[in-house]
Image 1 (tube, rainbow, N blue to C red):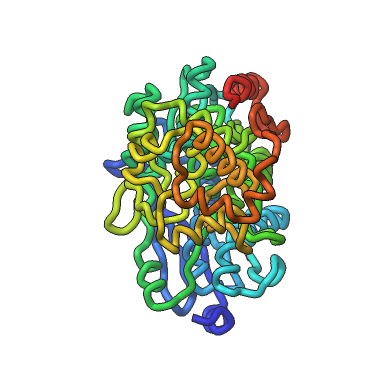
Image 2 (tube, rainbow, N blue to C red):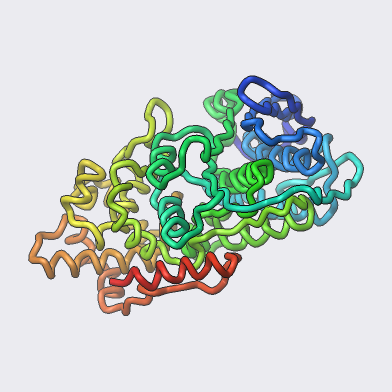
Amino acid sequence: MDYKELIAKYPEFVYHGYDVTPSKEGIRIVYSFETVGLTEFHPVWVFPKDGIDTQDPVFEEFVFSLGMVELVSYWKAACSPRVRVECGYLSDDQIAWWKKLYYHGLGEFFYTNGVDTDINRFMNIETAGIEKKLTISADKQLSGCMIPVGGGKDSIVSLHVLSRYGHTDDNMCFMMNHRNSAFASAMLAGYRPEKIYRPKRTLDRTIVELNKQGFLNGHTPLSALIAFAASLSAYVCGKKYVVLSNESSANEASVAGSDVNHQYSKSFEFESDFAEYLKKYIPCGVSYFSLLRPLSEIQIAAIFAGLKEYHPVFRSCNAGNAGTKFDTWCLECSKCLFVTMILSPFLTDDEIKDIFRINLLNSKNEKMKTYFEQLIGLHESKPFECVGSVDEVNFAMCLAISKRLGRGEPLPCLLEYYMSTPAYARYKDSPNVYAGYFDEVNLIPEDMKQCVRKCADECRW
């Protein structure tokens, strides 16, 4: 449907409120949103109830804020220019914060739907309610880490770094909804089920039906949702840190020469903004940071390549966990190809086949060739997936070629093709700036930062 027609027909979206009730599963939160004149939405969250005081004002502020992130998944169907928040107070600074998150977090959505707007025009937020001054209870004792685990290589490397260098006491893993790869990864890292906190999120299927009818659809800042949910979980479980696994390449734009970034809510800009928001508006005592922020994607791949016990269980494919598929590699998307590419300097072709069943670098599929070209920077945009920087991918391809030629092995067809591209000519003699790389711009506590530095120093090639 046409964006301009939609915003004229449905000019108002309302965040009515939320209902918090105990249930057999835990604390059940039902949100109430409405695109006025179209439909209502009622997504549901369930948090395991141990340790939750539903009368705690900090908990309530978390619930309200989680709804502020959740609403954008439903707002985007018609992009109503007026958003009315009936169930809480937001200062002018908070409104500006939320608009920044929505605008940049929806950058890909606006780009792919051809929406011509800017941060001042796309939305106005109005709130009701009275300003509350929140303070954390003096009795609230926090310690240890809450580690979001998605089942991919990045969170596995974080688990490895924390366990290898002594930061395992009193830690827990966080998982939004159950995923076999995430659960198996946590168990391999030594986390028993009682140390895995698993809130459940259920979408209102009305949005799916609207998408089928042609209402607008696209990427939303899921990692921002995880930020609030994991921080809420850390607070109720008494954990001091939320330890993310986002690396430095998440800062790179997906579209060259723009600020459109599929990974905006994994970027250091969002990480810093979110950490500051917690301090100012949700005084919970929880600190939020990414343990892998100092590292490059290729360093993480090199570390992960040595963690052989995780190779059979990890998954990073979104398409392989959608529709009728569950926790598999689809072997048809750009993410499957990227993971193959970034691991290829550190694994043999046989080891790659053991993980994926096939080596996508040997694919003769034109779609896969296009993804390959996007990843090495021959197109305007990278694939809209969580993938490494163009420089890192090209360095990985050059290193993969060098190692295979050095072993006297034939090159997979996409590596052969790569040698004919201008990218190879540009990168083949590039120095190795990644071994031992460490970005000092991060929010990691000093003791954990030293753990990451040791791991980076030990992983050279």
